[in-house]
Image (cartoon, rainbow, N blue to C red; front, side):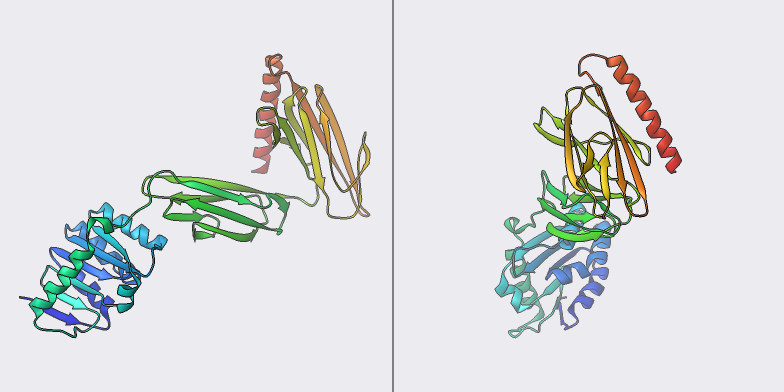
Length: 343
């Protein structure tokens, strides 16, 4: 009735026997062996076979792959226990018990008496470890995500660094060929086009997404960045414009709002504004908007001249609602026209 077999090719033998088992699979193994058993265990759980696993580790660290597979097994009513004990781990005395009658072990037993006594011994050891307090702890509840880039506006091919820290998630991934990542890290990237990097963090309850938008500006245009002062936040915030043409932009802001323009031109040339005169290649200009303001910037190099026109339309926060809506309608009509031309 009781059978015992030991094999140095333990993982392969366990996989074979798991496929043949009818009622109960109990396995004591490490993470590597656990991940190897993914397909046969999931298939057996779908067939209604009971599966119990004890995964031994030298430390408390659980890999993303381990947690992901554990969640899938638990979702199918399997049980996973996680033990961190370096002494037990170093013994490498892994085994599997199938239908309570067949034992496969990695190591040959030194105190072998009979198949029955050895199976009872291994079963008792398994039951000592597979207690409620050792059930694997899957992350649940709210996920905290920090995801930023050291630069968000740059030239084609210029490198930037993405940084992230994620708490309470068992899987973290980033799109655009970055893939699965650790819960904390950084990576240097470069892109040739406007690109959105999206980080996705998951636990058993939630899936959270955070994104970073990288803007690539054309060397053939003057890049000027616009911020306005937000009284509620009491700080400058970036604002977006509608690009009427490649060399013209319009902004809608409130009357009396502080506006700050900044630029950083790396190539040599002469930079100026029609009313302000000559300007440094790296600098800023701040003003308080009074209804309307138009700025025309020129950048002159040895071989080329570039011009950019920036308009600011001011509106009263409480009055002139009809005028504001009229401008916004024009604003979005222009945006739609621009998008259609881009397509």
